[in-house]
Length: 138
Image 1 (cartoon, rainbow, N blue to C red):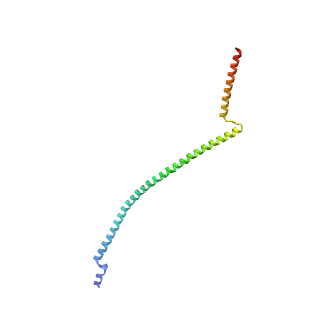
Image 2: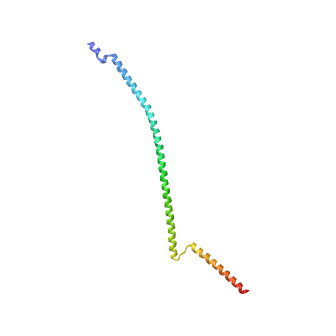
Image 3: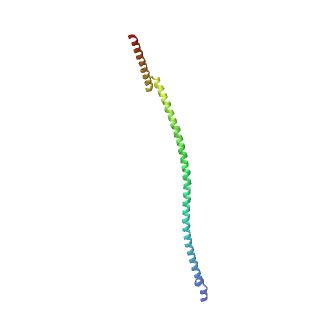
């Protein structure tokens, strides 16, 4: 029976040593893989950060270009709207002035022009009177 016990694998010291050595190698391989993964993860993370920065720079340029384009279009619309409002205001002024003239109400500029004409006529009339009065005295 003793021969049978010696042939069993659990009693073989050489086999036990091989298993122990294999287990140690597996353990060391696991540690190596963990270390390698940790190193690769750091490099992978850095590469992702670089690619993110590149993408951000590209998209920032595109976004800024789009913003400038929109601002240019808004400026064009603003200019057209301002021109339209100016034309509407001018048209409104003309219509209101026309309606006031038809009602017999004149603008201040019209009244000022008439006052100047009346003053000029009065000056002429006075000059004519003074000239006629001098002729009679002589």
